Amino acid sequence: MLREALRIGSRRWYSYKSVRRPNLSATAAPKEELKQKQPGDKPSVENGNGSLAKQLRAKILATGPIPVAEYMREVLTNPQAGYYMNRDVFGREGDFITSPEISQIFGELIGVWLVSEWRKMGSPSPFQLVELGPGRGTLARDVLKVITKFKQDAEFSMHMVEVSPFLSKAQAQRFCYNHEILPEDSQMPHYQVGTTASGIKAFWHRRLEDVPQGFSLVLAHEFFDALPIHKLQLVDGKWQEVLIDVASNSEKDPKQADFRYVLSRSQTPVSSVFRPMPGETRSCLEYSLETERQVGLLAERIERDGGIALIMDYGHFGEKTDTFRAFKQHQLHDALVEPGSADLTADVDFKLVRHTAESRGNIHCCGPVEQGLFLQRMQGEARLEQLVAHALPENQQIIRSGYKMLTDPAQMGTRFKFLAMFPGVLASHLDKYPVVGFS
Image 1 (cartoon, rainbow, N blue to C red):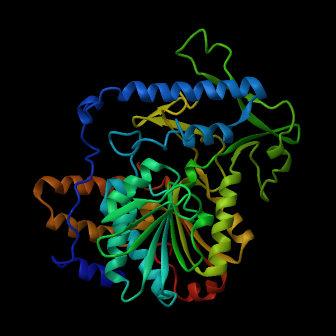
Image 2 (spheres, one colour):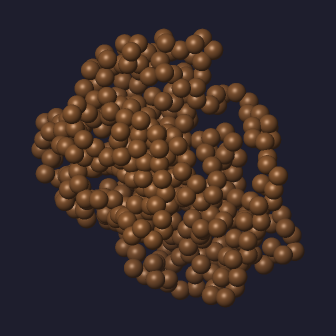
Image 3 (cartoon, rainbow, N blue to C red):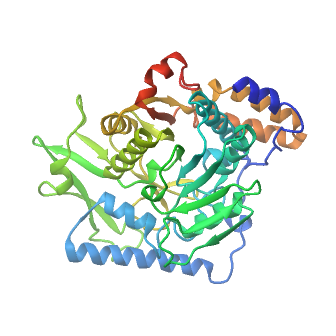
């Protein structure tokens, strides 16, 4: 499959046009030069952030300190002022940039990987291409190009799991020929529907549970790092929870954080039911109930309906303790200052992901492996040289620097990890035909 993709990809009639992605090695222009502010834009954002801080403060004063997970959920997905809900947060003009935005090679190789493993499973048709948290829709667009070329005569549909009205519209504009938002009272499992230029139907859902049953190829790129986490600390042999309280000095000094961390006086509902995995040695850690729930849903779906899931995120294998942080304009930002104005994130615990998948269903997991190693095993360098050979001279260094950022151990090459999930009944088959990229 890899040889076929690269062989065909070297022909001019098939080779994708080199997309001019951001030149991250260049000095960024001032934010005002990148995007002209419309009258009233800045005040509306600031007012939204201020309103969210007031809501959180009022809630804490009324009911007491809240878990980090509750704070994180409210800051990111509050319908009125949530970070992801009403604006584009990606790229140089936003607060962070993702791998698909850096280089088209990333999405193309993910597409080749999916088709290769799908063929090993007998090319079942019809199937569903599902993405959790599709961002701008760049990865879905790049993968769609590959699948459309190599799917043979199979039929498939696209299903995006997205809670943000703004981003769902941006995604549809990225890879659909037309799209429409359904009325709120439609009682359908999807709230938006579109059609790609090649005639593929695309649906948008707010929850993974709303995606129809069926053989699915599931992608989750930088999805799990945004799920709420609980911060737990071992005190005198019992797990207690780190909570968020109102900062006593926030009214006196506006430059100080609006909130502060406090340790629960006794066990909370989450800390009392938390059971560490065998061999746990950490005395403080981050635990995501929502990650367990989503991975469990994926495991049950793959075991019941068949399919593949590929999780791509920055993370660790159960050794890190404190990774909760915020990013604003590509810089670290205090997570407790101006909630709603910055992205909140925490490294994914891939040990928890793998343990949950294998314990919730008959699932065979591969990885995690480092992103740089995965892309190299997928012949990323060969694809790089193809793109450079057909690129304009002024774009060649941009393409090379983008791929280097994805694979360089000092940049994203080791921090990002890949983990794949397959039905457990295929374990012996996958031992005979190893999963490309993971071995």
